[in-house]
Image 1 (tube, rainbow, N blue to C red):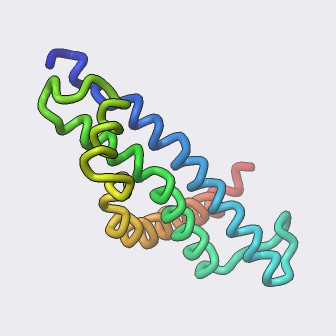
Image 2 (cartoon, rainbow, N blue to C red; image 1 turned 60 degrees about the vertical axis):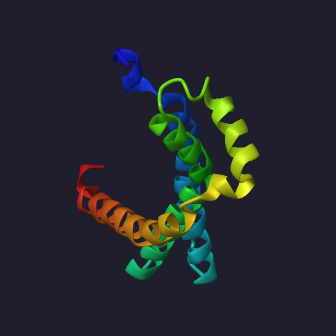
Image 3 (cartoon, rainbow, N blue to C red; image 1 turned 180 degrees about the horizontal axis):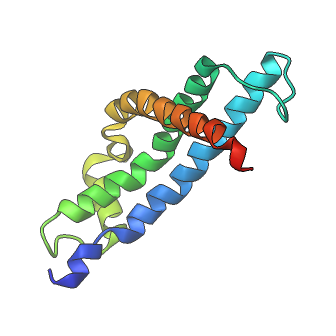
Length: 138
């Protein structure tokens, strides 16, 4: 171990969180915009209902984990493997593909998506409430 063991899997964390965050925010904003258009509102000035915000947030969370689960699986395998089992990230990927196939990259996606919808719906709803409450500071 040593101090380096504290940072084991950092590159995979970034590989998960970068694209996952892009999907998270992108799908949230896209869904909000399309829900406004579907209701005949101008996306620049419209105000969505709480249900629409919860829906957009939930879908954003599901999009995030749909993108983030493969690097998360690799990260978890790498971090929990005995020291010396893998030489690096690509080695984890090669072993996983050879031993378990492509479906192994999506292990755990079902529970992740089930959890993602309500958790991220609440997260974005709270963010929108906070934004509204702090609007006086603009």
